[in-house]
Image 1 (cartoon, rainbow, N blue to C red):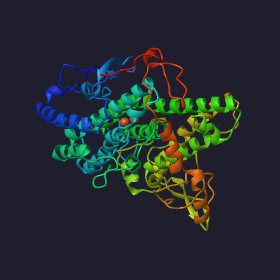
Image 2: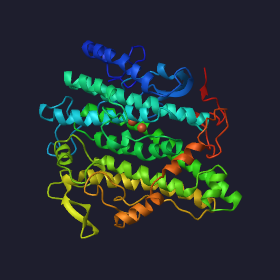
Image 3: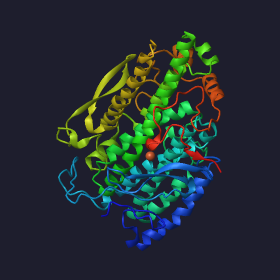
Image 4: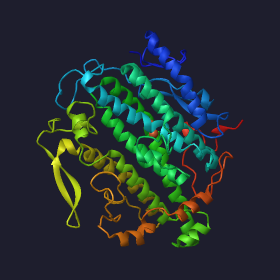
Length: 476
Ligand SMILES: [Fe+2]
Ligand SMILES: [Fe+2]
């Protein structure tokens, strides 16, 4: 297996695609449908612009990316996998110790297909959710980052489509077509998961999405990178290297918003949201409400707290835990338990369930730990600026729509509240139409090199060691 990527073929790849003519033809048949989807549903009014994008040239950890100005429809989407480790074994579940599978075992076919389709569906969904954002980019630097994320989510779709075409026959090809037919928020044919049918209407939402929801992607991909199905593991490992940049965009984006808000607060010597808004910055209370929304919607993506599918996926080796091989337990988990939350007699209490059935909750808790780290780093921005306000992640039972906590009314601090108390306080806890209206009133396109909208601070560094005022996008 070569690790370099062959760009001389119609579909760039490092999977020796030209050796399997039938597969190559099938994918070349899917390719124009993909490009049609990109043109219809991808970034709006930006198809002719030259964007400073990175493209994978190798899957080696050192120096896999090349940067150049390219038109997005000419981006070389392709199929890249980490190299195969011949000795790789299954590291968990009832087949632990067996050789990893190079093909799909018949008995796991339906479940594996479902896992791959569900992951694959999120990738084009986020491109659809973000397609209007280019029209209100706060800078050329941010515009470029948006487009980089968009083309890479498109490539992640390619990664899943390759697996479907190669390993799932006609069903796989039909699923690959359907991935281009469902659309985010479509009333008749929506995307599979709730958070991917929500709107990403403004850049504050975009940064929250890339921080929180792309991080869900990281945890799902990490769990799939442990899979006994080796091609899935190798594919998701390479996707993870791209995902890191998406989360960076979110984390640094929010940090820059906070930095600008703090500067305005210090300048005006005020904590008054109305005054901060009047000065064209986003008040910290609004940022907290956006955070509450994106955090709660995203943790629903991990699924029901108790799930027999989660147990089946783990037992049979399809989906592991985050950092499975770094854990020092037996990797079978039979007879072990895990605490999930439920409401008993008006109180939130721990309920111990078989750990195998609680694996969605295990992954959700790992995710929460990781995502709270960034909230702490955001608070450092406020602390350094001498601002007393602190952001916090809401309680994991807050605003849930999936699992045992769905519909239970819990405050961000984790207190069970009455319907009345919820109704009175919702406006303090979740973004209101008025908040969204205010944020959207700030959104205006700033695309002069080195200029930034008034509600966000410039980044400390440019992309690929280019200056901040580099012409990251050339408009045509
Ligand atoms: Fe992705
Ligand atoms: Fe992503």
